[in-house]
Length: 268
Figure: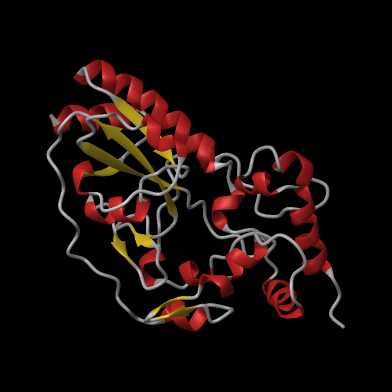
């Protein structure tokens, strides 16, 4: 059974996945997509899509924003896989990518796809934290996987390297996270602007990931949609075209231009 599943998923570049019990999900997020979940859902196939493409020291966006919008890439692969799985197993298979009522982190941990780091991210044994999650919900009952026994090293690197001090061993203050600040609309405080300028990032932040021991010597992604179209630097010349193809496009050009102006501003 799982051999057939693995063979089909592999055809659509899904090389790593775990399965958890849909009926054990503790809570759902408010999302209209919940209506798409099969009425008698039993299993969740949680899939990992790695996006690591190497190091780009001059980049002014985080790694997931260097590659084409993962929402579209993952959704395309999941839809193709779901069509093949529905035919093979004579059951319902529905794919979800980010915009979902499913608690992705809970599903990933329960399925054994990875384990949780101090920075709140799921760590995959092979891909580290540089991967996105997609789910396939089905009314077919598959054997479930067990959570991993492996744990984060709790070395404190992410705590020490967080540029805003948002991460602590006891929890995360997401309001101070640089990634969240770069996505915040409206006028930023002088302190927030200084933080962005100091780190030279107009979208996202990988500081807590780059220093993580679990993210060292990672393989380059096998997903051609990511590896063949990497743009590490966003500027006025390429901004308009990238707004149509990158994950930050939904926030609007005004916000990205504001951020570009901030990091390009000469220090007083």
